[in-house]
Length: 296
Ligand SMILES: Nc1ncnc2c1ncn2[C@@H]1O[C@H](COP(=O)(O)OP(=O)(O)OP(=O)(O)O)[C@@H](O)[C@H]1O
Image (cartoon, rainbow, N blue to C red; front, side, top):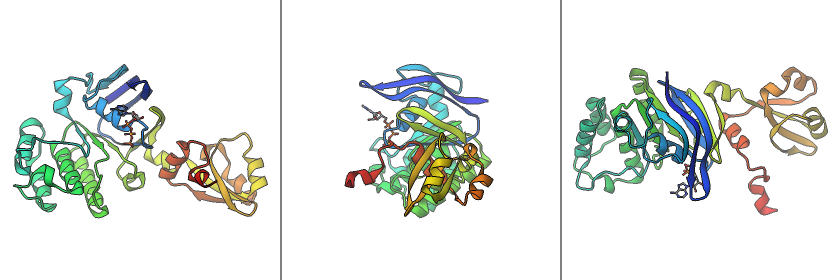
């Protein structure tokens, strides 16, 4: 069953298109990684799905309803980012109590265990937490709410690596026990790989890829070989990325389905895997020769 459906969704921010004719759908009980470079439209999309912002045009459906101003969607979804704020007069324990009052599927045991494990103090206030601790607390709210639709916008901002790993582990364990539809936006795809079932890659407000994580891992391959041989062989094919690999040697990244690996081997090329995060970077490259251009 589809839980999220977008059809030709456009969001204007001034004259610019933060989302541009975006269409995709997400099945019930999946974890999707929302990936894209700065300004790609990730936050805009998540805020529209969470009902916080209104789309300019197109159709958005979350749990079969238009999310903007929908009480049903706000009760059954949660949007978490590092700007998630709470009334300043509430301490952390009181915030958890409010969460329990608002979210129908709230799991008190999980909230309290995580609260203790990450060494929060009941009387602390949200505003006085460090950046990483604030993200950790926000993520506890996102987990304990067990909403049908959970939208995390760079949820691990400021967390140290150990906490990030633990949080993703908790998320996976809790998801297996209590499946729901989760989208996580992040710039660190490699840290999320084991968690994600699907990846949605945005660029300039448009969908570039939406495919299972396993397929993304197999999407591209790196070839290293003599420049003229490689370029001749790849003529007419899309090269996602290329760079010099030594005198007269070239490294090129191409879609796996576009080439024959036995043929590449026969021509003496070295074949190497390409990580899914590198694939995303190459596909959304601005084609300007990268940061090296600054020094030319
Ligand atoms: N409140 C706003 N007013 C004007 N433009 C905005 C506003 N919010 C976002 N934008 C623009 O919309 C586009 C998409 O921004 P968005 O924040 O959705 O991207 P993002 O993928 O989340 O970026 P990042 O990875 O940097 O957080 C950008 O060009 C941004 O400048």
